[in-house]
Amino acid sequence: MPRLCYALDLRDDAAAIAEYENWHRPGVVWPEIVASIRAAGIEDMEIFRTGNRLVMVVQVPDGYDAAGKQAADAADPRVQAWERLMDRYQQRLPWARPGEKWVPMRGIFSLVEAWAACDAAERGERR
Picture 1 (tube, rainbow, N blue to C red):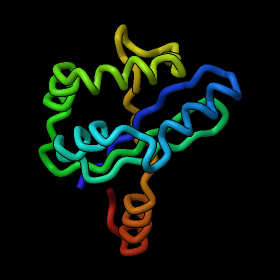
Picture 2: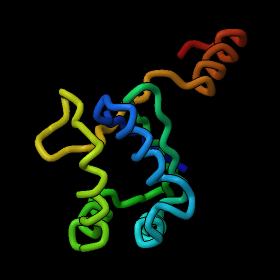
Picture 3: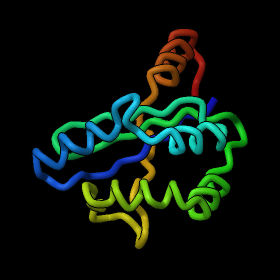
């Protein structure tokens, strides 16, 4: 089951950050947004923050259609209204492509893979 990670910055303003966090509390985030996420097949989504940097971790099934989710969001007026609201708090990462909010992150370490390599080395296998 793939896990996707994305990064985004918030405006560096304590009051704005508090408002943004409030919008993401259970029962405050619009139900249509939660429904659109689930309708795309997304199994879990979490957003973490340090300072004004956000990291979103998304658990998706094999064969997840990110382009389909993006197209559905673009066609959904309620999702677009949410995006405009959230855009008041967000700022793009300097290396984001034009129009890109959440920038995909590339994994650079996996404990499972590192452990497997250690086990293989102990058995004298080469990777």
